[in-house]
Each structure stands twice: as C-alpha cells, then as structure tokens.
Image (cartoon, rainbow, N blue to C red):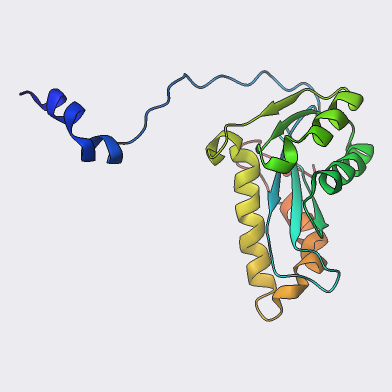
Length: 181
C-alpha cells in the first residue's frame, strides 16, 4: 500500500488533515470610490456598560480602511439595521460584505438593503478569513479596549471615539497611508 492510499484510508489522517479550499479564491473587483464596498461585523458580548451596551457594530471601508463603530445594547436585526442606516446616512450607501452573522443576513437586513439598493455579498459562514478586513480590525479593537479598560471593563464604550481616532491616524500597511488622509 503506498503512502497516498494509506492516508486516504486512515480515519485519523482525514480528521486532522488540513482542509484545502474547494473553490479557488475569487478576486475582488476594483474599488473606484470610498465606501463603495464595506465589511461589517459584530463584537461581543462585552461587559455591560453604564449605558447598558454589550456589543459593538463595526464597519470598515475596504478601499481606505476607514473604520466606524457603534456601541449597541442588543444585536437584534432591527437594532443592527437601524444603526447601519445611521452609519449610511453619514458615509453613503455602499455595496456590502457582511460577516454572515445571523443579524446580518436576516429578513429585516435584506429588506433594508433592498430598499437602499445595496448588493449584499455574504462571506463564508464559520470562516472568518473570508471577511479578514473586519475580523483583523475587530481583533485590534478588542485588544486596544482590553488595555484601556483593564481597571474598569464596564467603561469600554466611552473609549470607542478615542480608539477610532487613533486607528484612523496610523498608516495602514495595505494602503500605505492612514485612513484619515
């Protein structure tokens, strides 16, 4: 029996073998203007704040890497849809790439996007790498907040504006400039 046949018939080898992608990675179409394509995600639950917030809705422009955040009390579809609408009134209506969270693919979100003329492109479920832009930002956001609120974890929402300000002013390795430039 050769090695390939052995590995192919070995139950433990099949369970622990790295999974290869079934489809080739598709190239993203070029982005022609800011906020044409954004990635969205949800961070939490976090310690409840004085304002009763436990979650953060995050949004990042895929072209400029400009981040936006909103603290949320709950992550119902209607709460998320309402907060996204508020963000869109400030930033403009984009194409969408969501993290495929339950709240981001609900009927309410789909109807909101339809009414606004947004084309929703969902990422692969349980595969955070397919929405890596927002997942990396969410990881950085949590790490920074953890350091800032070490003595008072329930105050994280008061630090969001300062964290966003700092993040926007740092050069991004991908774009070569800070999102604020």
